[in-house]
Length: 421
Image 1: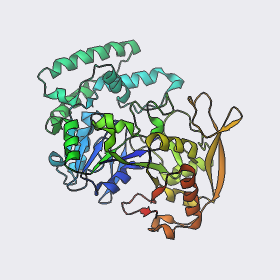
Image 2: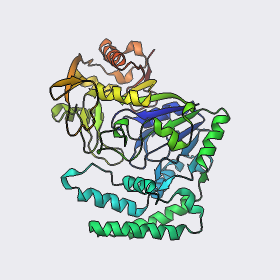
Image 3: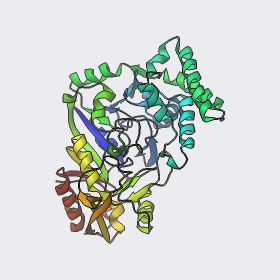
Image 4: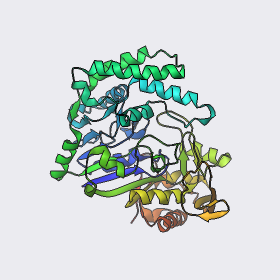
């Protein structure tokens, strides 16, 4: 059986810690989509570690980690990550495997990403400029190079052919930046990549399933950034929802067990795009400051706002969420009053549905107020010990969504998890 952990908002929900928390109970952790634009933050031996492509189960002894075919892989970023992980005494030759169908991010993909974003002017979508979009475009355009291609003697020829195609596109953008240094570190990283365990991912994971192994599929970004169901065009380039597990790992739908959705106790977003509950004021700034809301990958300040239950309910529906993890509940400790968005007002009418094109008709949020708890909840380890106002907040969310919050994360530490009975 394959359980899934994924984000229910616009990413940055704290999935890395949650996967790390659950990983000890699984035999294999697999990333099924996204690329180095993800930043999953863990604390190992009291040291902060940010993983971008390696699954978050890598620090657990005996747990196998697989980078699935739905991921787009930057070899340079991977090498840096591997060096960091290895410094903790982890033997990646034993516990990290990479699917041969995984597409490679080339230096020219990064250049195209930058050139395209610069050309948009005020219409920027907030790309992390990691080459994610152009790589997925080559994948769907049937031009991309994959990890398995590294083992072919004609790889260099195929690389040059694709690079020339990219150069023509860059010329159209009048992109003049010299990427020679990018290419040098790229080919150096490719030699390192070839030394890792490159496997037929779909056979590899299905053999694990048949052997009765417990598998955890780890998502990146969040459901509201899904290429199909997110706030298009301000989205990522992959399917971030549970449906992406099947195509991103090569497993059948009937193997999916629990879908564990992760949401913050409030809401954040990085980059452009609609954000109905955004607090572009002193309250939003306080949320950002207390929650340390700056991107793990880019360092960009995150936009902050109250929790949006309309969007959250939508995300639970399309993912088939069976359990919810609420993170950063302790960030709300300082607030006397809290707000929860229960409805949208669009064209004068109230609705509990996410509209087709949210940036054309930006919903006006309708809020329900709650009392804050003004207590340091970060030291609490049982649900019964939480303030009544905290439990009231959680109970309302449970009732609205029809899906229960099973875990509350109240700090960055591995032990800062409260189980909800």
